[in-house]
Image (cartoon, rainbow, N blue to C red; front, side):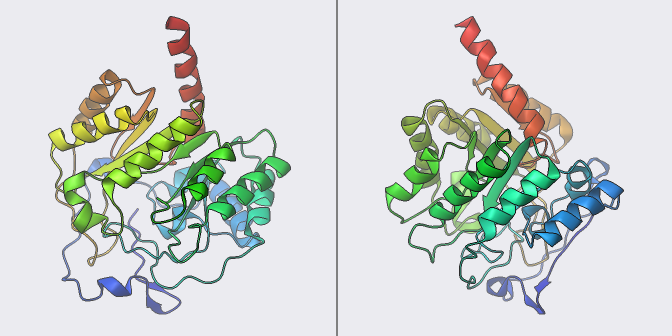
Length: 319
């Protein structure tokens, strides 16, 4: 499925990228082609999202797995609005000046989770550098709303980096005790200035480490994209850094260029290389590894959470 979203409300989604030179979007190989969405399950999920006036990263980031996930009533909710204050070179989420916080949003997310009967839910957000706490309280309120409306649902969060915010902001989210705390490193340190210019690699790594320091029982998760020009050795070093920070679960997926103005794809990584990276990651001691061209942070998140729990139990039993 090819989804390229260039405008939002008639304006460029990425005004900061309009001066960038256009680069060709490479034709996808067979292993990256997916069927266009349109099943009854997809339509039902879309209606619940629309009725509850919610935003999903599935739509905003033009995820290639939206048809498969929404057909199974799996959606990743994006809170804190739909406009990001960062300008990452890989991301299709709209950038600019965000609207004021919607204080009713956590309750609507909780209601949607209950209506969809989700056993596991993933909550992510835009970056909100304009907020004093980076949106931490909104994460906490959303977790509480889901716990109230659907107590049996396990909760996975994919957070921004809370850069230049009080440490208490991050700690409040940790103390809300999500079942999985995910924060993506996204790429290798060498590429941060061009791919993730508003972030800092070691700050993100330290965030993941702080989660484990404050609550050792909380699962931590992080992901990287490949196909941006990184080397295998650099990806292996990122794996080592993640393990040093206590990360339990690593995801590795192919970068896909949203528009001609975004960072170009260096190459399409073959599925065999993803399998090799998976073997390396498992050897380094991760409890769980998801590595494939279509792997995304929240793809198969519910099934993966069950495997993650089983892997921890097995490791503790063997110790």
